[in-house]
Length: 122
Image 1 (cartoon, rainbow, N blue to C red):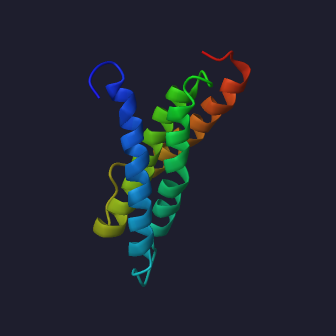
Image 2 (cartoon, rainbow, N blue to C red):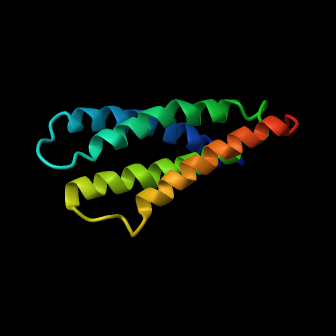
Image 3 (tube, rainbow, N blue to C red):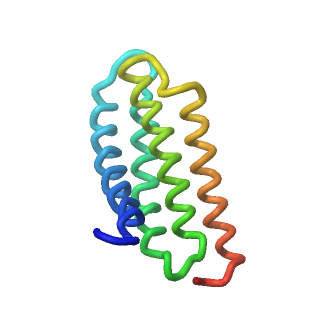
């Protein structure tokens, strides 16, 4: 992991952590009773995007926008899921508009993936 590729390998780390956290959040969500359960949507987002980020990392040679999309989606997942989990356990947000900002990042990341269809492969 030494050298220029190290920051990009963080995407693999994020993908693994998103998957693990998604499973853990699903288990935790099953035990939350009462009011709003913010852990379930956080779990779904983490589990949906874990393989996506890994796939984008692996597609760098075939999709010109893969790396940028993976980073944007990763930031979005961190913001969205992080905010929901913090709100579930503390009642406070990471910062104002953290979850919506994360959602916008994820949508933008998917638009960057789509834009790759119109660009020549690297």
